[in-house]
Length: 376
Image (cartoon, rainbow, N blue to C red; front, side):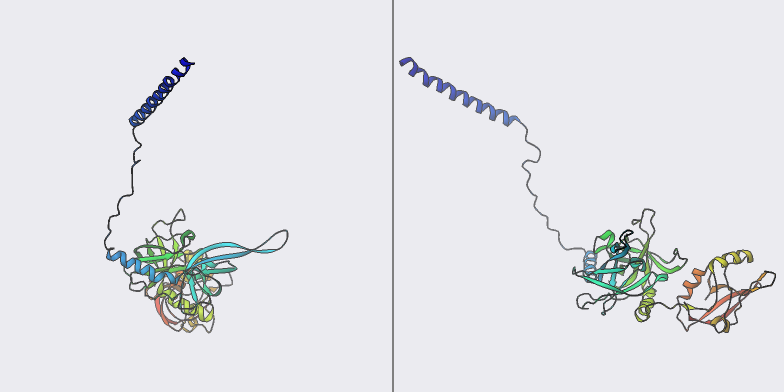
């Protein structure tokens, strides 16, 4: 019994000693393991920025002043189920627009609402409004919608002019590219008086070319100058991929300011015309046969402006031969080589204006004054 009681403390001491040695070895080995890089990292102190640059302040102010005038447009179209014959509204697309006046008129591109059965307009305050179509001009790619809003919430954009724009001046675009609402991009006026021929053969003249980023969804949004004035409506891009490639186009505000009031007043745009009958396809064939660039007048109905000016159309003989009449080669000194170009040049004038027409008949060129009449 005595021997057993004497050995217990010795064994306990050995156990404690072994434990202490193990703990010491553990801490020794742990201290030799290199610490992970950055384990003791803490947030760095913030460096004071100082004042924003003057151009940054100006850009921020421009965006904050203009943002509430820009809208986000979503459209739907109706489809019919083949089996049930039930009609459903499905999303069609989206685009941008801007408040035109205090009566709730909104301007956008025609192609934004083309083939849509309904449109919803979201304001910068997040509220949605059902819109109704007031009028549209496909040849200008302009449409006017209307919503019932208070002018205090969404003021109209101030209007500038496009006739004194200069290549190199700064421009700003606000829109909703790819559905990313109220996006600001900036750039410069890259070129002026560009023209684009649309699929329907109509030519849009005087377009502003810009390198401000314009992507799908920006269509219909405003192009602003550095004073925050509207100078154009973003309408098209040149891009093989469909995304921004640094070449965008905007319909100039002078065109918008001429077309939109007519759309609001009449629901349509009345083109100034000469009162002649022409055809793009026939014109190309006849011009090639005659060997002259211009617009071959097919017929001049009596009572029209062209008839009063003494213009003549073609004469078809009994044997089928065609004798050309007048061929329009220029409007106010500007060459005309297509029906689309003719319409675009006449669109610079108003019904009731007199324009100088250069025509060629039997190889002899002359100028005549024609009083423009309402067209189709």
